[in-house]
Image (cartoon, rainbow, N blue to C red; front, side, top):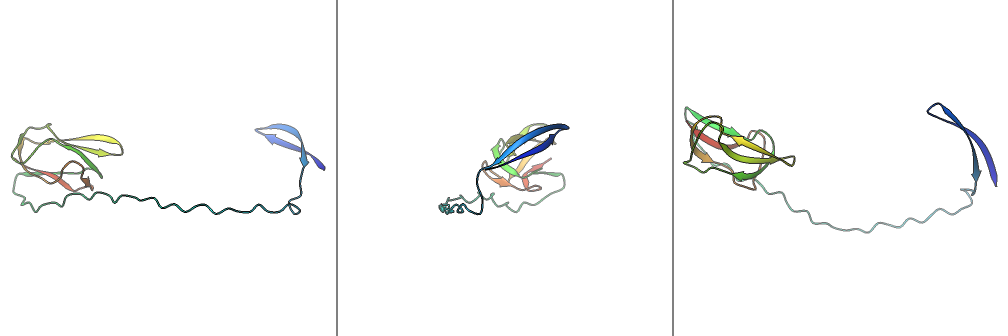
Length: 131
């Protein structure tokens, strides 16, 4: 067996270390590799968002768009409802946070383009308000 003395410095402190060589790498056989088993894991397809219906924008209409990608958790309004500035329209889940989307104006809900469970993209129209 071969022994070696080494000096190792760690964070400015020197250590004297004795190292013993216990085996020759060339004389020992290489370990056999065992292939990993192949397992197929089914991945569900992402739920697509509801297609947006064609809605005519009129003067005075306000678009409520998704500020970020996410999943609609809850819709609190329906077509024809009257809402006031600050009223909660829907909850958008993004990055495991619940984001409340509130009405920026007082008006009537002209259309709701999403439902709970829909995935949305940034800028996608969620609700259309008529002032």
